[in-house]
Image 1 (spheres, helix red, strand yellow):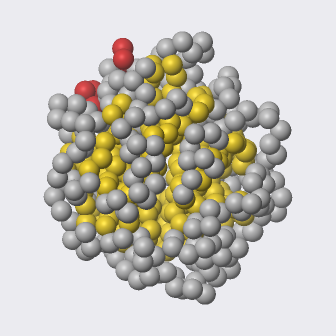
Image 2: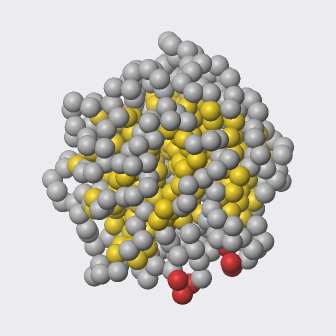
Length: 478
C-alpha cells in the first residue's frame, strides 16, 4: 500500500479521497492486511496454528535437515539512488523483470526494468504508470510463452490498473482499470498464464453500496489478456477487514492468500488460503493459521502497529502442490516465528502439520514478510524472508531458504542475502535498520536460479532503496 513519504504529502492520496473505513495508506501495512479468506467460522480446521503441536525447530542460523547444497548468490546490489519502496520481480527463460515504487519530491512513479540475460545486464528504467499520475503497490508478471510482460499498480484514488507490453517495454497497451465501478481497491496481486491469455488480480476492496464499508477479498479474472475482466469472486464478508496478500499460478490452478483482522490490528489475525481450479473464476477457502496481534514498531520513524502483522505467502510447484509460509506469534506483541506447511493438489483442503522453520518468541528474533516461489522441478520451493536478531528491531537481514522435497527438509542454514555493510547509511555489518516495504520479491527462472529483491531503509518514513541478489548457480540436489 502507498507509504507516507517524508518529503511531500502529495505522495499519498489526499485524506479526503481515502477509502472511508480502510486503513490510511500512509500508516501501517494496509496492503498486508488480509482479504477475507472465506468465513472464519466455516468449519475449516486450523492448519498449523503457531501455538499448535510441537513443530520442527530451526533458527535464522540453523535450518531444518538438509535439502540440497547451499546455493551461491551474488553480493546484494542497489537498484538505484532513488527512494525506492516495495519491489517485485518476475522471471521466465532468461528474461528477468523488476518493478518498484520510486518516491520523488512531487510524485510517486512505478518503475520497471528488464534484463535479457537473467540479471547480468539491465536495460534503462521505464515508467509504467502514465505521466502526470502517481502509482503505488507495483506488480509485475511475465508470460514467457508469449513474451509479454504485465504490470499493475494502484493510483491516487485507489483504483487498480493493468497494462502489458509484448515488445520488451517499447510499447504498451492502454491501462485497464480492473473494476472501474468499485469504490476502492487495494494492492492488487497480479498473476498471468504462460501464454498471456488468462490474467487474475486478487485485491481488497469495496463497492459503493457495501453497507459496512470494510474492504473484503476479491479476485477478478480476464481471459483475453487483461483487456476486459469479468465479475469478481468475493470472499464471504465478515465484520473485520480482509486483505489479499500473495498468489501463485500453475495452469488453471490459481492460489491466493489472505488475512482477516480488525482495522486497528488488535486481536487475532486469521490466515487463509484460496484455491481455484477453473483459472480464477471461482475459489474455495481453507484457514491455515491464527496469529495474535503483531509487535509494535514505534521505534521506527513513522511506523505504527500493523506494519508487521502476520502475513501468508504461497508458491505452487509444477505438479500444482502448494507450500505456504507465514510469520506469526501465539502471544500478542511478541516476536513472530516463521512457519511453513504444504498441501498436495489431491489432498485439498488438508494441509500438513506446520513446521516452525525459525522460532521467535520472547527474546528471540522477529520474522517478517515471507515470500515463496517454486522452481522447475516437483517439490522445489524457495523461500525469502526477513529477520531481526537484535530483539529490538535494529538489526534486520534478508534470508533465503530452499526445500527440494516439498518442505520435508531444508538447508542446514539459510543464506544471508543482505551481505553488504556499505552502500547506504542505514546499513552495517550486522544488517540494515528497517524493512522498507511490507513485501519481498522472489522469482525462479527456467534454469532454477532464484532472483530476490527487497527493500531496506532507515525507517518507515525512509529514505530507502530496493536491493537485489541473484543466484549464480542452478539449484543443486541433496
